[in-house]
Image 1 (cartoon, rainbow, N blue to C red):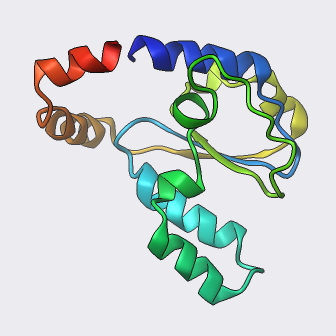
Image 2 (spheres, rainbow, N blue to C red; image 1 turned 135 degrees about the vertical axis):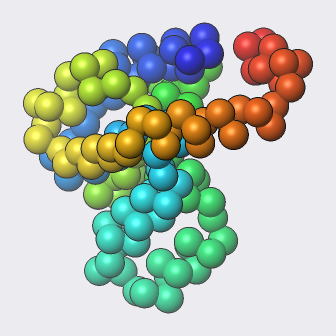
Length: 142
């Protein structure tokens, strides 16, 4: 894990206040998170107009519709005000279960934990990371 994501994970752990209506998708990297995010968004918004859901899915990346706590919501030591988001609030995370914010358990929110064969995850991660040069990785640390 790169340092900024680790810091953001700690900030999220300290400041994220889960609600009982929240849905948190927890996965390891390269386990099908993007695909499951789209399905989760469609399922959570199923009472909305179907054409509206399809337009949202067609015009937005699923990472925009279901943001990562540690990589999109709590970034650069910012503590966002999430109180105005409508229920159910959808979030994703690669944070290990033991490091999730205490409010996740206390609130009784729904947690979707996606597990995939570790060998498949490592192979997928290897192919994904092999696209990057060492320079790309060094720039991510800055």
